[in-house]
Image 1 (cartoon, rainbow, N blue to C red):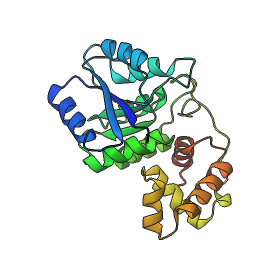
Image 2: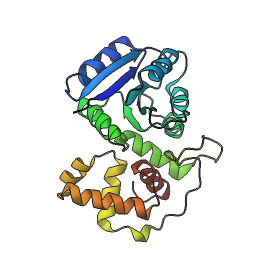
Image 3: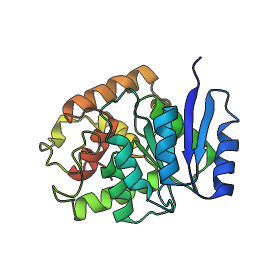
Length: 233
């Protein structure tokens, strides 16, 4: 089994050591590199090409949002790591700026270890993990004050700088709305199946139908469009 190769970019030594120690408890994870600032971090990512970069939003030389934007600016998706933003900042501006920069998942620093590991696994599988606290912030801001079209770079993942097609709320079934709510809360297919007492195969079918009905490319887009349209809350 190929391990999930992770690079840590975090300026606080104790926090970085704690995250590394926690991740290395899992056999499927390999921490391939560490950096304490954005400059060294970007160079490390270019050299090591990890699967996932866990990036602190509050780096000393350049914030994690700008670093994420630079990481995602590469022309090659094959070598571009997925980015998990790690932050203590839960204000709307910081959350949405990170979201618009192209980060794949969003995790609060004070989250439980199990949540961080879940975020890593879900992100590695090509889906988004959104901390429930962050999801609520995105919902509030998206409903009250959507970003203007020039507030973020073009990004198919963020979908915040566009005017997406109107969502017809009547096309989603009651069960699909339940699944969508859990997607917004950052739940994996396994967790959704457990909470709704259905099989993972059924969850995958619902997720596929939701993506089709919302004209979304992935779970992140579906979550954002749901939040902006007020489908979930």
